[in-house]
Length: 91
Image 1 (tube, rainbow, N blue to C red):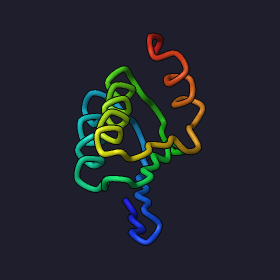
Image 2: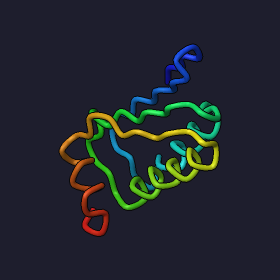
Image 3: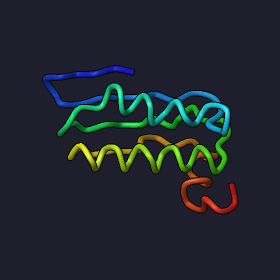
């Protein structure tokens, strides 16, 4: 996690698997570090696996961002993450 207050930007880089055992940590991190009005980026370039729990966690992050008038952006999704986000029913 990196935060640049002067730029109103919070950046979270995710690595490894985003699944039932780890997904709950993502919304908690956004809740802890995201600031009202910020741009919050999730870098998914190093996601090696993602299941429905991971997709749901990303959706929960989007809801948290909206509740804070912040903007959530997905950056550089790995091929695995891109497929899961494009068609969450098949992950």
